[in-house]
Length: 316
Image 1: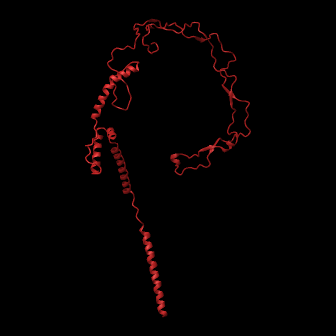
Image 2: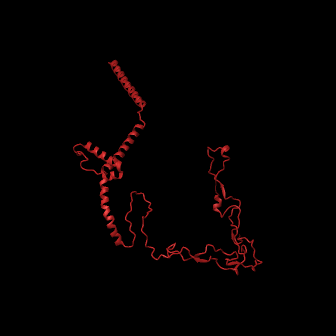
Image 3: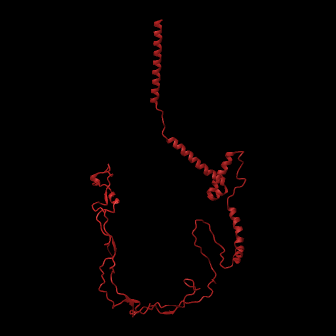
């Protein structure tokens, strides 16, 4: 019972809420050594890094070459307006000469750690002779102390609440059992839930709308249109009451209607696209030209035939 937080039983002793730490109480365990002094050779101004004197400038280092140069292939855009956009400057690219050499521009020695660097001097810490330890308030008897050796024995409960996060409605809880025995829990469920559930299930089934044989008048063979109309009407009546129940009770009718709606929408979309599509008319100019050429060729042929006949008659 002490492993709970807070514990089942409160502590018998608590901190005195009226007790305060004395003003002269010292709770600092370490202090700087007052007798310590900074060494004479301690240089607080020494830098952390210094140039490496052992490194020499490479022979192929190009001091006069810039690391970046204007891109020779760049051109000013045609829509560039110097008055609105300012003077156009070509973008820069890495200098190819620098890439082939060790480097370009002003050469500086690389840095290395300064062996003489010590940083800011501070006195070493020693034990505080006036240290008294961590202050704690005095302990007093807990005025609200009690002892409960059987916390599992509850008084009669009026109700139990459940906090659930679910997207499904109509969830009910009844006949709550609190205990350690699965056998007793099963017996309790049989005596309570097992008695009420068949009755509740029968009442629930009786309230659900059902499809009986007398709902449909006739058959598919006798009158297909009337048969389908009755099915659709019955499905929509169920749909108004409970959409889920309608699809469960008449899955074929519901699925057929869904497929039919999508098919009709697709056909309507295709019809609209055909109506709105541009009409392509044949080019009459080429046809007229072809007819003109054929007529001209025919007249020329007839003329040649007449001339031949006339020459033949003259010779005769």
